[in-house]
Figure: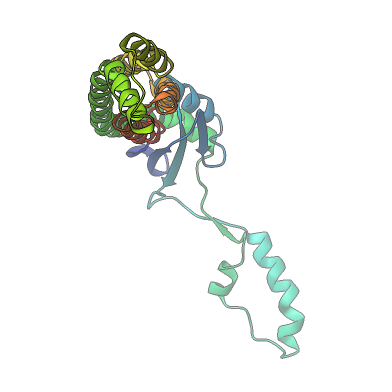
Length: 298
């Protein structure tokens, strides 16, 4: 079985040494079912330029699914990196608070308190543009790794789906073969039902064998389901072929499920035999399960 599912998760981590400390990042990719390809990205500020790269990489691997790709990045400052102190802001804060201190309404500001004021102390980090220039190739390589991992996860789901769908197709084939056997005996069974019915309603009437055969043939013709059974068998063969293909098969499997249902409904509406009707209902149950599982296939 070569089909792929649409549900999966993957993560890939990377790291590199920068001018002001180590840089670590992690790509995560997750995917769920969708009728088309719906790609959403969550990137740190300043890294929006990676969106085009990510979309192209994902588009080469996937055709369906709601896929979310996110990048988390952390720059670890070097121990020797010197902080930046905004002296002017410190002086302005002290000057602004001096009247309140001198009046005794508040105490003198502490050094640790001043450092907590936003903008007083800053540790300079590399700009996103500098980081992309430094680790851009490594980020792209890790992105490819995480997308390959997601594809592998979806492929694993596809193998499980293939087994389930293969079993359902076998079930449809077996029911179709059984229905063909019943349908083949239809004319004779129809003639016998007409004979028994007339005998019960008018036992004194002498039946003309030729006329009885004609009437039975007309009734059997109206209830002929051979064409529907042939199409069911052909659809089952096509479904088996799709399960072995490497190309995305979800949409075609969904279409086949609709065609399966059309033939099964016609079979039930034409059927004049209780056993054949029951087989038609069993077929519809199996076909509904095919449709449910096809919704998970890429």
